[in-house]
Figure 1 (spheres, rainbow, N blue to C red):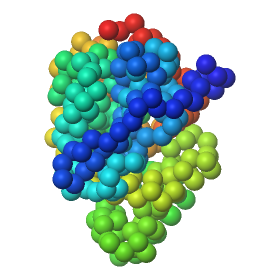
Figure 2: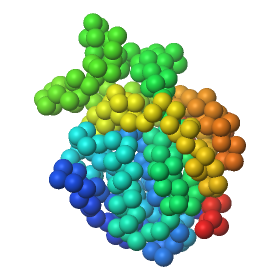
Figure 3: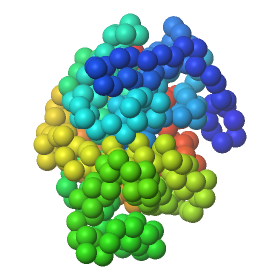
Length: 316
C-alpha cells in the first residue's frame, strides 16, 4: 500500500451498461482479481456517483471490485433523472447487477447515503451479503434531513448563508421546496446555479479542515447536477423508507459480520446516528475516528476503511 493508505490506482478490467427499463441505463465496472472475493461499492449522495479512487479501498489481488453509478448519477443516464428512482429501484438494480455478474454473495461497502442503501439492501437480501462495511451513517430520518437543510448553520454559518441566500428571502422558510422548484426547472440558467449551491454546501461541510479540492469537485457541473437533483428528490420523499425502517430491520442482519466507521466531527451525518445504530446493533463493530469529519478521504477514515477491507478478507 501507499503511504496514504490507499492501494495503487487501477483500471477496470471490464465495464458496461445495464438497461434497467425504458428510461434508465446503469454504468458498472469490475476491477481487481476476476476470481477474487466480490465486494460492491455504494457511492453516497444519493446522486454523487463513483470515481477512480473508490477502487483503491480494496486489495486488487484479493477482491473482485464491483462499482456502479446509481440511477441518475455519475455515468448512468439520464443524469439527474428522478422518475422511477427510489430506494426500492436501487435495491432491485443491485440484484440485477449481481445476477448479471454471476455473483452469489458479496461484501457490501458504503458510506453516507451508501450506508443507507447498504443497510436497506442487506435487510432485503441478507442471504446475498457476506459482510458489511459502512461509514458516515445516515438513516434517512426527518431529523437528519432537517439537520442538513438548517442545522448545519450552527457550525457552518458562512457555508449555510451561501446555500440559503441562493433562494429569495421570502422562500427560505422551506428550502426543500424552493430548491426542488429550481433544480427541476428545464432552464440551465435556473437549475445549474441551484445545483452548484446545494452541492458546494455539502462539499464544504464534509471535511474536518477546509479542503478546496473537495469543494471544487462538488462544484463540477455534472457532479453538482446529479447530486443535488437526486438528493433533493430522495430527501423530499424521506428516502422512500418508513421513519424507523432500517432500525426495525436490524434483526434480519444481526449475524452478518459488520463494522460501522464514523468520524467524531462528521457534521453532514452527525455521530448521534451512528451511536444509536450501534447501540441497537451491538453485534457490529464500531470505530469512531477521533480526528475526522464526513469524507471517506479523511486520513483516519480512509485508514479505517482499508483496515476493514483487509480484516474482512477472511470472511466467506
